[in-house]
Length: 294
Image 1 (tube, helix red, strand yellow):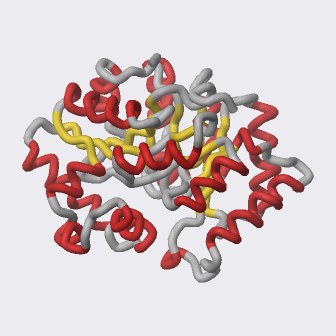
Image 2 (cartoon, rainbow, N blue to C red):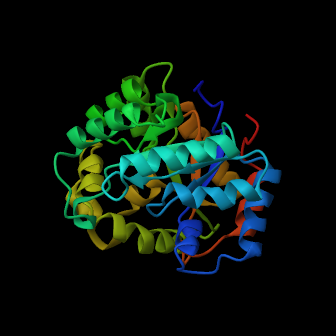
Image 3 (cartoon, helix red, strand yellow):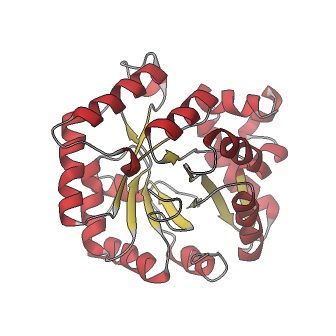
């Protein structure tokens, strides 16, 4: 997969579609009209957050004509290789070139099967390679944070889809990935010009992730301390892993990630209920300032 070719420059990341398709929220025709509008606005990829299944991509692909749909991410502990490969092959037949399989090892408190995550991912990729309907390396990306998983995403996938990272992590990841592998980090956005209010919204959401050792371990490697994890995150941490402010301020932060080596940025607009909201107005405003065709 040539860098940027499938994902475009800017995508939208949300868990709301996955939750709705699981029955946790509405999934009526209007929901998919939103996906069609994002397609028309020029966003490159719809990222399905919230541990989606491959099948969750089908209605979004059916509701759109151009945009890529990607899992961000599918947990390798929850889905059997044969099912993933077969379902991905069906999407490729019906919507050729428009689905990207994002894979990750998730977190230990979400599954009793969690052990040897790096080795388990290698084994999962080998099983995808040898499945009756193989998933090509160029059609998959890995949720990679640390150096070993980043190297694996370079060697065994199209590239990496890191979550909850900073500009500095993006630059370090680019060094590990080299020139050719794709780097598509997620970036949380609070579109609110009142920075105190924006940080409060950010902390309400960030608190959940600061209970997960995979994320806090990566943030410690980046130079944050345990004090930064208290009470939903210090100002320094919040400002590093979120883009806060009006649309122009968000565009400036996006430019920083792209300059650091990101090929694609998966924007997650954080609201008071990010697991269920589809913040259509915010996505429209951002489409006016972000480099969707860059």
